[in-house]
Amino acid sequence: MSSTVRLTVAQATIAFLANQYSERDGVERRLIPRCLGIFGHGNVCGLGQALLQSELGAGDPALPVPDMPYVLIRNEQGGVHAASGFAKQTNRLQTMAVLTSIGPGATNMVTGAALATTNRLPVLLLPSDIFSTRVPDPVLQQLEDPRSLDISVNDAFKPVARFWDRVNRPEQLIPSLLNAMRVLTDPADTGAVVVCMPQDVQAEAFDWPLEFFAKRVWHVARPVPEPAALARAVAAIKQSQRPLVVAGGGAVYSEAAAALRQFATQTGIPVADTQSGKGAINWDHPLAVGGVGSTGAGSANDLARTADLVIGVGTRYSDFTTASHTVFAHPAVRFVNVNTLPFDTAKHSATMVTADAREALTALTEALQGWSTDAAYQAEAAEKVQAWQKVTDECYHLNHGPQPAQTEVFGALNELLRDEDVVINAAGSMPGDLQCLWRAANPEQYHLEYAYSCMGYEIPAALGVKLAVGPDREVVSIVGDGTYQMLPMELATIVQEGVKVIFVLLNNRGFASIGALSESHGSQRFGTQYRERTASGRLDGEPVPFDLAANAASWGADVYRCATIAEFRANYALAHANPKTSVLYIETDLLGPNPPGTAWWDVPTAQVSAIESTQAAYAEYTAAKAGQRHYLNPAD
Image (tube, rainbow, N blue to C red; front, side):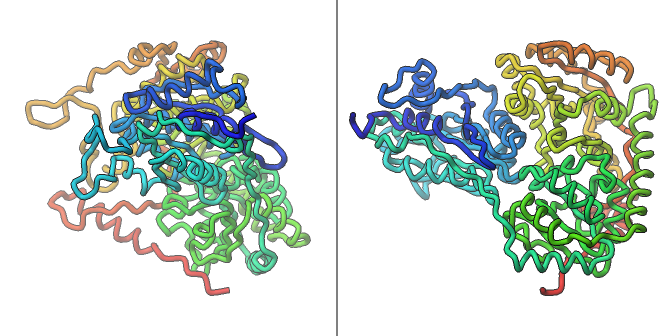
């Protein structure tokens, strides 16, 4: 048998990807179980032909590989969001490849790549590129740069990718794809991986070594804490009186929920969570105190203000988590950070434990045997949680009218969803309401993309999440009217693939989050409502008469219109029983009411203005900003 096989670069790419696996804790998974994409002139005869050959089983008999299913998407950005949602729901142990043609198809993916990298989610992007030979130059959709003939629009991916390469010759594919897999399975430093595929090279044949296509297992590491670092962290914890854990996405991705619960139970340290970390500790655990930061719960933020030690577990300390460096207000607050990425571990001059979250929590629990916070502190935390649960119940059952508040919709959903179901959201006022109110039973139930907070994520992500969890769990994606108008078309993809998702489409005819922010900062909700332009030249006329429910139905979904929360609950039961994708459409009050804010967010306000509301807002902004600070631990 020959030790080589002759394939095109595109055929070799698909054959290689089909045989890549990840492994953690002894469990192997297909790393890339399917491709998403749209074909254009730059890839239809390259990667498109290769995927057709894979589907037909028409490859070389000497090279048996698993098939690579292809999903036809409607928008390239949506395809990346679907891959990100899939990767997030599988705790970054699997992802999908997204392929596009040259030009606008490629640049449509840049926003999705930024989302993936910001969230530290692995996605593989395969944009087509210009001709490597440069004979037909410029080709259709080529952006020419007079400074260099080696630049294409794909260079725009470089600042938003963790790995970027261009395959100008067949031989380059081998190191390029191997490095791509390395980054996709790196628990510390993953994100968007971009391998640019010149369209002529895609179709070029080459004699490939068979070893390139052998099954390859990429072992996802669980780095253990270095003993000296662990000892420093233990000493810091034992010296503290009011410690607080902040659980981030790393606690979820490392599947550290059980270890976190045990750590909290044994040590008596309260646990707050970020958007990505919600559910890492179940909401009804005696020491779970809720979301922390700008959109956090009052219970968590009250404890954060007086914490003398913050133990960050898998968090990158976003602006919202720290309430723009104001919520951790103890004058001598110190930090212990557990993270796989030293960049995050070192934040706030912390005592660094660069390790896997589960392994670090297990080691800390063992090292802290016999030590616990005092009973009075634990009782204080419980009292604050009880008070906030009353606030949550009030927000969930407002009986507001004539249009309900969106918090009432969330309350109904929180009570209707089973523990194994998944709720999805990303942008607008909804993530804030959800972080401070949602009662997450486990790490898999709450799927929020808030690192990039990208409008348009919710619908395509629902496809990826549903492909990850399978048919027995409901995936419920909450979509606002603003988000819906940005990327609704993947509803057609979901219907095409025959998977079931329940969408909750809330229409308040504007941007509730930015409108409230504008009003609170003196800008009077300018430009945040969907209204017709009047003779005065302002957008202050009648509401724009669009029908989002009818639009959703046009994509192939079953639509249930809901006028009240009682009707919403009844229609949810119908959607749950319906084997097809459904949309629950409900109109809500643009003005809320919203949950009470318990922390600050730094949004700069105009220093000078002729508008009195802006002048008053600037005075408030100046007063709040006085509490901002850098967190500078004394050196260990």
